[in-house]
Image (cartoon, rainbow, N blue to C red):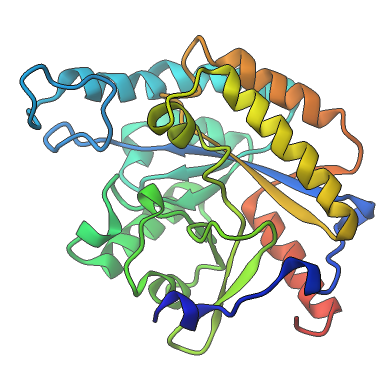
Length: 295
C-alpha cells in the first residue's frame, strides 16, 4: 500500500479536540535507541572518515565510537532518568538484548517499555525476510521481558511497502516511523485492520542534529525547549504529543549530557505535562477515539 492509501490528509485544526487525563495539555515521551552494530559489516554511520576512503572492515574507530555509548553513555544517561524519576521507552535491536544484557536488565527493572527496533541495525529494505526479522525481534523481547512488544520503530525509520501490514498481523499496536503529525494517526493495513502511528521526531533527534546537521551540543537543548514551548501553546486547542529521541553514543557523550539534563529540568516544572511511554499514549488515544465516536 502507498502512503496515500494508508491514511488520508487531515488538518489538525479540523479534528475533534483530544483531551489528556487530568486536564494535561502535553504528553512527552523519551525514546532511547540501543543498537548493535555488526563489526563484520559496513558501519551504519561514521564519526571518522577512513583516511583512504571506501568502507574498510573491520572499521574499529567507528564501531568503537558507537560501542562507547553502550559501555558508558547509557549509564550516564540512566543516572539522570533515575534522578528525575522519568520513564523512558527503549527501542532496541532484538539481538542487542543479549549482547548488552545489563542495559536490557536495567531498563526492565525500571519498568521501561521495550519497543521493537529490528533484529539487527539494518535497513528494513535490506533484510532478507522482513516477516521473520520482525518475528525474531518480537520473540527476543517477549522472552526477556515476559511481555509482547506493542510498539515498533524501524532502524533509521526504514520500512518496506509492507511493514505496517506485517506489524499489524503480528500483533503490534503502534509504529513510530511516520513522522508527520503532533497527534497519533491511524494507518490502514491490507487486512482491513488498523495500526496507530505515535508521533516520533526528526527535529529533536540527536542523530539528525549532531551527526547530519553538525550542530553544537547546546542546540539540542535549545531546539527541544523551543519545540516544547510551541507544542505546549498549540495544545490549548487539543492535546499534543512530543517525542525526545536519544542514542547513548551521541547524547550520552560527556560533553552533551548537561544539555539533556537542562531539558528535563525545564519540562518537569511545567504544569499540565505528562511523561509517558508509547503504549500509554496508544491506550489514551484509543480511549479518546472511543469517547469521540471512533474518530
